Length: 249
Ligand SMILES: C[S@@+](CC[C@H](N)C(=O)[O-])C[C@H]1O[C@@H](n2cnc3c(N)ncnc32)[C@H](O)[C@@H]1O
View 1: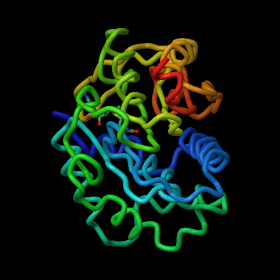
View 2: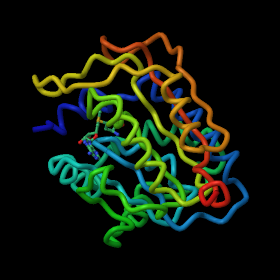
View 3: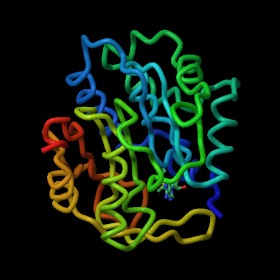
């Protein structure tokens, strides 16, 4: 059983240097990809865990968001957190980091906007218990998946299948951002050790290219301060899902 609170405490109670770096890179990528366009209809964050910042990164660019996770405890944690209206807002430091970009500072009530974006539309938006492997094809116009594909398996084929299912759930040409732990030997949550596949940036780049991703960009961050021991750094990948023409050919 995944302890949602412990995972949140270890990783997201405070804003960490690596997340700061990811926020800068992904907000810049999304602004370059989407600034000046009307918001897309719907976005998805796959394997949200207890992390709202991928959804917040997508907030200025989309009307609706689905947070999908396989774990029942994470789904109920996410629902409780989204409904929580107390002060301080735990995600304020993350949002303040995003507000360095104009499109984010233009969103006047991000907490309320996030609730509206995550209003239930079954199978499309809301918070749902769903496996990455069961995602429908070509439904979301924007997507994020942070620390999921390499953190749910030790099998390279399953890792690749999870990345393929995420990219496959996006509409042709949809922008996406994904994050991965490089060289991870697993991670602890409340005394239980969860397995991971020790991947490298090149594995991610090769696989995204095989999936027909347009403009794949894959970087290993060199932030010196780490969240924990037992990994070689964080990888940030961005790009655009394979477009229609190439999908049909
Ligand atoms: C290492 S955590 C990452 C959580 C979060 N995205 C983050 O950035 O911290 C991996 C997440 O994947 C979820 N997960 C495990 N198997 C999954 C599956 N088959 N489909 C979707 N999510 C899954 C877990 O419940 C967990 O929340």
